[in-house]
Image: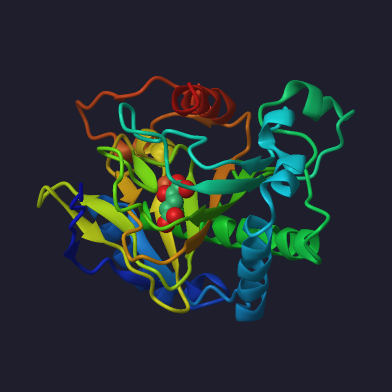
Length: 322
Ligand SMILES: O=C(O)CCC(=O)C(=O)O
Ligand SMILES: [Fe+2]
């Protein structure tokens, strides 16, 4: 049986984020206008002018491929099932992002902030603790740690840009960006089989849980974004030198759905192996997520109750790993 996962080609905007690194007020304001439009439309856009070294990106992909190429026994030495902090290897079909669909045809590897096992935070906080590092891939850990730090800094810069786009001061989200919970996730999608289960995909349709996702793509297609107005999937194909950025559910809560957290999925039908590296930036676990006053028109009521970053994430993990 063959399944069609056709999508339209459509252009998501490319936003040059370089004004956030010391640009003029004018260049920031112009960037903020484009960003606002993208966030109100789909919450999906490409980011250029990010300053991340292409050599580092290459190192990350190389280390990721080497890891996924290891024999299963080696990968299971760092099985996520043995980590209280959700770190390490997640086998194929380990997560179901689309309720009711078959499990996702992807394998993954999860990395977070390095926190010692006997640290108070590791004992009490969600997704917090030591990483599991694969020792048989040379330079895996330094490459990932360097990339994690670069992504954390870029994400904070994007949060500052989002503040400007909402007409707020650039440092409005500074507290949220203090000691943020982040997850770096390496993904490998084998080619979609010729006889897939009905509804089987690389990544089932989902919205991201957290604040923002900064997604590094290889050169393969497969990512599709739901276009609510056109009631169709559109391809978000890789553009060299950019990241795909999308807004998660927390931003939708914050903005009372003015800014979108949009459904997306992956269908790897190109026949090739596909690798991607999402970085999930979720913010300070104690931060309260409540509707921003600038997003409430007179007479509007907040659509979501107040929550905290940690409580929100816990609930979302519970749902997709049920
Ligand atoms: O692999 C991709 O392109 C997207 C992955 C994704 O949506 C996710 O991990 O949340
Ligand atoms: Fe996603």
